[in-house]
Length: 57
Image (cartoon, rainbow, N blue to C red; front, side, top):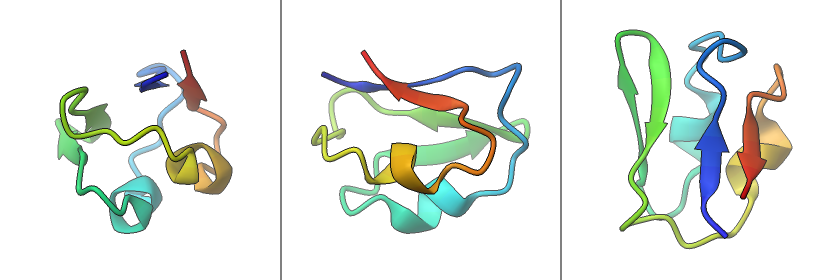
């Protein structure tokens, strides 16, 4: 399962970027974007997202 960002819910806080152990998340135009090839499916980003914009597919 790869994490997925709902761009309409993402508030651009960058909390997930700091939390990701695989450095798989970058900000693009104020929205978190997850690199599927780098994501290790740990779910850390899902747990820390204050707007519940990240889910595991």
